[in-house]
Amino acid sequence: AFQRCLFWLVDESAEEKARPPARAHGSVRGARRASLRRNMADEEEGPGIPPGVESIFLTGGTLKIVGLEDMGPEVLLKRVSKETLLGDIQYRGAISDFTIVKKQISKADYDELLIRYNEDDVYGDGNNFELAVTKAAAEVFEAREAERVVAAAAAAEAAAAEAEAAKPGRRKRAKPVSKPWVSQGSETEIAEENVVTSTDAQKTTLQVFRKRSSFGQPCEARLTDVDAITLWNSASMECRPFKEKTPSVRFAEADVATQAVPATRSSATQATPLAPKPMSTQYEPRRRVASDSVGVGSDASSEDPDRLRAFLAKVDPLMRSALQQNECYDIFTDDFASLADDDLGASASAETAMVEVHSFTSLRYNKGKTVACVDWVPGAFGVVAASCVATASFEAAVKDGGAETPGAVLIWDFEDPIHPRYVLEAPADVHCFQFNRSNPRLVAGGLANGRACLWDTSEMMTKNTHERDGKNVLSCVPKFVSEAPDSHVCAVTDVRWLGADVAVTKPRGELVRPNPPTGACGFFATTAADGKVLFWDVDVKKDAKKRDFFLTPSYKIKLGRGEQSGTLQAVKFDFSPALRPPARDGSLPENATRFFATSADGEVAQC
Image (cartoon, rainbow, N blue to C red; front, side, top):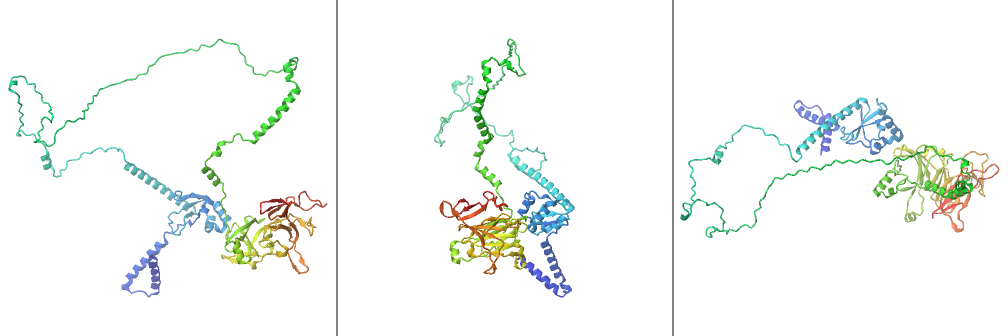
């Protein structure tokens, strides 16, 4: 209803601007309407942002990066260095929350910038923090915070005093204050309730009777209680009296005092020393002279070198074993540390867990797919490449008739996690790829249909760009794609570049050194579940018959299971670090041509 009223007022204001001026007698109504519209506009705009203050919105991730995660209703002010904010803007680029105030931060007249938590959104713009870019604005923030702290302390003292007053328990009674009597008209009632001694009142007469025979004798009669049973009369008493059986208890009190005094006794003991004896202490070792040991049987046998050699040979293995045990076993290990609670173990593991820092996604290329391969771009800081493949079930693949879906390798930059830097397109899903270490512009990949492809990003053309989210993304098509007869019959599972100046010749697959050596890496190898390893040369030559350039393998290797029959379905493989071109005399290093491969059954084979 409020929005409708507001829209009606806006439309009415537009109509009144188009109307001619009203007559004099109707000006009061128009003035009221104009005043109402101004008040509503002022309420909508809210208070203005003071000079030197920038209202911004900071997310939880930004607060954790710049060290402000503890700010909130309890911590309203905190300082952050200008260098930290500019570094976050430079590292994260457009996704940094401080990008919109980069100029104001750079022009700030002090280094430690003051940030205030805007809990109530006083400006009505939806932001949750205020940044003081001038020193004067920072001083205003600090003064307000000091006033708030003083006011909060005063309120806390008042609340404590009020709570103390409302606290139940024994309180100190206030001293009564005497006040003059104020009559409320109750003197008559008080006079009626007063007991006044009067001499005119009727006196009570007590008559005492005794037998006539006792006349003239001293009066020894005593007034005592009489049991009610003796005076009971059924005509005048409804309830028959009875004697109470509960005995009466009488307490006897006596004043008794006891004083306990400890008994003390004086005693003494004297220790008489024993008789003195002559004693001596030696501070220097006694040294034996060679002449002293001659002629003494026991000493001479102890100095026998053969016996000493035999003793050392006997204890030497025992001593070595003891030293090895001391080195292998930590004598300071706490055996009870392994008996800690499970909760403590869970918290310790949680502290060392890896936390996600960046995530990259593309709705065009990655939607509904899983990541198959990741590789860093050589020579580029903060640039990573990733390929995704479709996860269709066997029934869905049969339903589609084995139709191939286009694949791609996305090159992501940490400065822009929303738009890829460029895309390497492929006719099928890319299961594996690797950048050339000596020439990062060459990228070798293996496709889901068993073919190998080679991209050359130096030939990337801007005409292959497409617009995505308002930004043009470069794309690169493969320079060469192998033919089906010369490729694997299964999806390529791994691809590896060979070393620099290493070439594999046809048809025997010998390692040779290119002439002249260039130091470049010109061969790569692929493997698949069909049990084959294919070697490819990036120097593609033109086919004389077909008159076109075709990527064909220069050598093929079939992987067997050794003594067992069958083919090794390789999943991953890697060449020896000693793989290098032969020497000038044709000799090769030991194990230079060997490589390791793993199969889908968990086998590790040396080929």
